[in-house]
Every structure is written in structure tokens, then in C-alpha cells.
Amino acid sequence: MPQTVQGVIAPAKGAAVELTTIVVPDPGPGEAVVAVQACGVCHTDLHYREGGIGDDFPYLLGHEAAGTVEAVGAGVTEVAPGDFVILNWRAVCRQCRACRRGRPWYCFATSNASQPMTLEDGTVLSPALGIGAFADKTLVHAGQCTKVDSAAPATAAGLLGCGVMAGLGAAVNTGGVGRGDSIAVIGCGGVGAAAVAGAHLAGAATVIAVDIDPRKLDTARRLGATHTIDASGADVVQEIKNATGGFGADVVVDAVGRPETYQQAFYARDLAGTVVLVGVPTPDMTLELPLLDVFGRGGSLKSSWYGDCLPSRDFPMLIDLYLQGRLPLDEFVSETIGIGDVEAAFDKMHSGDVLRSVVVL
Ligand SMILES: NC(=O)c1ccc[n+]([C@@H]2O[C@H](COP(=O)([O-])OP(=O)(O)OC[C@H]3O[C@@H](n4cnc5c(N)ncnc54)[C@H](O)[C@@H]3O)[C@@H](O)[C@H]2O)c1
Ligand SMILES: [Zn+2]
Ligand SMILES: [Zn+2]
Image 1: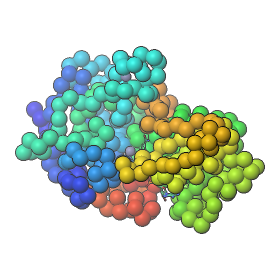
Image 2 (image 1 turned 30 degrees about the horizontal axis):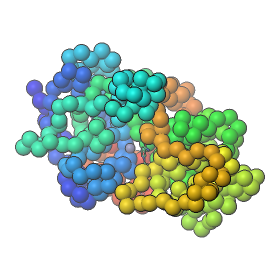
Image 3 (image 1 turned 135 degrees about the vertical axis):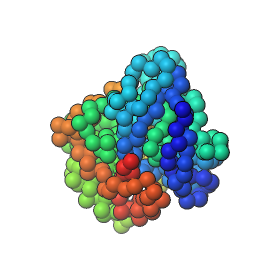
Image 4 (image 1 turned 90 degrees about the vertical axis):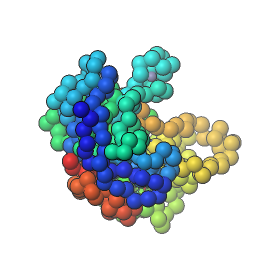
């Protein structure tokens, strides 16, 4: 029997979100219904609401979640009812050209549920990143459920489902930051702060946090930043060079995703260094760089989708590190809120008051 539950939708471009009744079908072959316990509010949800990602309104928002598998469809072997899982938005296919070459984190054909969730009148909902977890229950592809140790609270675990994994992975997986390296992170919201924590965990010697909001720099310091730069009144490139013996950082992560922050990242890295773009630009943005500088400075310019993570490899490992006290996921949870408070959480994100608001269901 399809179930009716409460969910948060973005009804139209730029309109405030609404809490409404949604219909969740029984899981079909390869699908699972998950009772959501917690879901973080990510900047990407706001991008959806503003029409920056697509025009497939209404969207069912929320994609950074943990919960319990309630039911699975035919043929599902990877998870079972009762499992505590983190939802991921890149369930790999194992068959595309990237998967076949042993690079499943680039999978070009990731899977979502095939049946739609709908409004009561039958209107089909577009779940954010194929998840839609600002809802009591959601329907996903079983491969989107990654089982982890249930000793971790859902509020902390869910954050690995998007922002923390994206930021940590941008530094460690995409940027390859390791012991003794230097890194600068531009923009220290949920994503950038996780890049700082990941670099610290990986043994980076110099970790430079850059933001226009001093509160974000305080948090970054607690997460392992060795230097902080308030970008509102500084020459960011020069300050990063000052902190790295005059040379620039081995890796610079742009966790804002604007042409000006990308240019800072480009020029603030050492020769042969790496730029990692993890912030998501909007369609109107363009970038102009002297091609001679692209050549002459060498190194690599990379983008990071979901921190180049492999959920089955990374989520259980990072939860274990959290339970051992080595990855402070609780630092990212600024507040827990109810399912009716998502619009207010967007306001707090805008004003910089929070790293993450987490909806508890
Ligand atoms: N690539 C991925 O897989 C992936 C995954 C999740 C989120 N994202 C993207 O990452 C970005 C960050 O997400 P978030 O949730 O951390 O957002 P957020 O709003 O919490 O953080 C953004 C931070 O950037 C700071 N900032 C803004 N302009 C700046 C500037 N000019 N210089 C320095 N700092 C500046 C803000 O003060 C804020 O602290 C978003 O674009 C989001 O869509 C990407
Ligand atoms: Zn694939
Ligand atoms: Zn997200």
C-alpha cells in the first residue's frame, strides 16, 4: 500500500518551501523505502528552490540524510529492513565506461528509484539529487542506501550523505592532500569546513581557512585550520602565499564556486599545485584566465563531484573514525530543527548563522 507522509517541497522557482502531504509507493524491484531520522539543510537545496539546478518543479527537497530501511523490493540483497543507513546520491551502476575501467566514483549512469513519489493529486515530484529526504519516508534505489554502524546518531551520520563527504573528499580524494602538504580552503561553510577537517585528518601540515565571515573562521580553527584569512578585507592570494613561505599552497579548494574565488584559487597555489572546484557555479558565470598562466603554472585544475567518494568504501570508514573521536561530525551540527523549519534554515544559511541546520524527524 502506498503511504502518505509529510514532505517539504519547492513548489515553483524562487517560491518559499511548503510542508505538504506526499505519496510514497511501496518499493519495486531494486528499490527501498527508508524512514528518515535526520536530514541536513545543504546549500544545494537552496539552489534547487531558486531554480539554479533545473526547472523540474515541484522538487521534494532534502538529500543529506540517515535513517532506517523500512521495506525493500524484489531482488534487493545489499540492505534489509531495520538496517541503519546513510543515503547517497551516487549509486554506482558497475556497467558504464567509468565503472568498467575501475573508476566507479566517476560513474556516468548512477541509479535512482524508478517509481515516482507524488503529491496526493498525482503530480510527480522531482526528488533533490534523487533522494528527497525532508520527509518522514522516502523511496530510493537500494544502492543509495549505505549501511553504517548504528551507534552513530543520525544527526551526525546524515551529514556524510552530502556536504561533509563532498568537502572532506574534495581535499583528500580529489586534491590528494596527505601528510605534510599545504592546503587552502576558500569558503568554510559546511562543505569547506569539512575540507579543513579532512586535511587535518590526513596529516596536512598547513591548513589555511578563508571566509568572509569570522564565525566560520572560528569553527575552521576548531576543526584543525592552522591559519585563517578574513577575505572581506584582505588580498587572499598574497595572504595564502605569506602562510606558505611565499610560494602558495599545494592544493587550493574553492568551496564557494564563483569566478572570483576560482581565480584566487588558481593564483594562490604553488607551481604544479592543484585547484579543486567543489562549490557549484550558476549557469550565468564565466571564467577568463590567461592561457599562458594555465600552462606556465602547471599542475591540475580539477572538479569534485561528491568528493570523488565511493559510499560503500567511505561512509562506514568515516563513521568508524567518528565513533573513535577522530572526525568531529557533531561540530557541523549547529542546530536541530523540525520539518516545518526549512525555510527559516535557508535564512540562517544566508546570514551565515549556521554551519548546518539538521531536520530531525
Ligand atoms: N561538488 C559537490 O559534490 C557539492 C556537494 C555539496 C555542496 N556543494 C556546493 O558547495 C558550495 C558550498 O556549500 P555549503 O553548504 O558549504 O554552503 P554555505 O553557504 O554553508 O557556505 C558557503 C561559505 O562561503 C563563504 N563565502 C561566500 N563568499 C565568499 C568569498 N568571496 N570568499 C570566501 N568565502 C566566501 C560564506 O561566508 C560561507 O561560509 C555550494 O555551492 C554547494 O552547492 C557541492
Ligand atoms: Zn557506472
Ligand atoms: Zn548537498
